Image 1: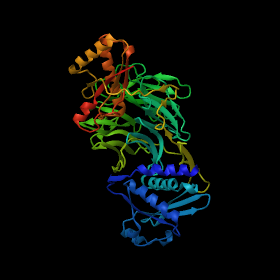
Image 2: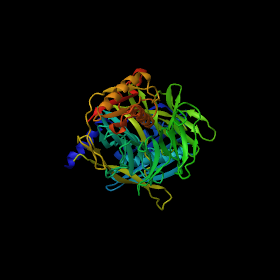
Image 3: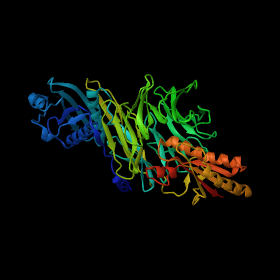
Image 4: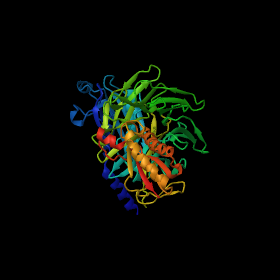
Length: 417
Length: 165
């Protein structure tokens, strides 16, 4: 039986891993080399391969390949500074792996060429089977050292695929490896969302011929319908403290925003009017919710204080602003219609400055990475949807083409810590 | 045994006493829920939803972009459905609302349900009992034409009316 399970798991890989293509790199990526300290080992070379891929994939690093090197030092003392200055290399990352029977112990240090000195030393400890994830941690440590922003190689991506009318809700490592199917269904799955402790997810499933919101425990697969209703229930959003779920329902006649306390199931209604109110998203402090409403005649973004129920309109420019989420206290990311195209835009709530970030035609479902610096969204090429992304600080853009059917509804995990 | 246990990794930090920061990696599991195997799908509240095959739509009503207003050219068909339903109170009508792919999925879900509601409101205004009408919104999830052009979009912005028992 065990063998059978393993085969089944392998066969999941048939619909392939996500492949990330950089469509626009940073104007001045940081040039580094990653070398193994002392002697080369199988696991050491594998870690270097994963870390190199992680860093290259950000578009903010240029990682030298072995045949570009003028000399190959096996420790800091062997570094011939002029070789590296000639190559314009900023730093060498030395990786030292102790691969024992019961543990994987990775030490890494960052050696700055111009200072000719070691600038940072860190260690990652894992089980022997955690090589990929441990490597992502090394990548994130290196990323943070150079950019001062948390790296996101160790986070997860959740997304929906559709292939021959089978819908799958999938979670994978951020590099597309280790894809796991969370839900397989004959009906549409939309709006997947992570709980802030990343132990649970929620989503909208049409399996019962209408929109219903389920929560699902990742480890046990246990599913729960949040409320039983003959009307549609959709657009789930976990509160930052994980205790409440905001959602949209037409249970009182037209689409309104509600908040349910997950412990005692008490439901609070936040909006009350004849317009569409949907797509709630919590502020980072959990005190406010932004949502889409067409009460003015076109979809626009509003903000409501969950406790006082005071509302204010946030968007004033454009005939279509929807699916907003807070980038931080003062900025939101949303879908904005500019001329005939639907794009992802960033709005500063203080200065009212609106910045359109994308230029494809039908961009939707923007989701912000937990470091607050990368936006992933879904867009279309011909009839097939695929995922694309943009790095806000470096302007690096990338795409994850659909290798099989459709790829849509991305949702970035919180930091998994 | 359709559910497959697969392990994924989760990570937590520990801080070692040494000056070198140490991060420790731990293992967690995920599980697959497969709904495709069973024909009958049960919702978690115990209600078995029989997915009735309702066949072809009796009537399809089309709408304009981001709009749920009934067009004049739809009214004649709706009047005839109204007459049919009033003449036989045993008929139950299912109205499915749909949207084109443009804009966001959740807003389109709400819009599609409002289109279905607009048809219901028209019928009840002409004297049909709302007890004999069910409405549901499918958003942009079930296009009749999956292409990305105006011709496909105009066909997808629709309400489909089915007579069910």
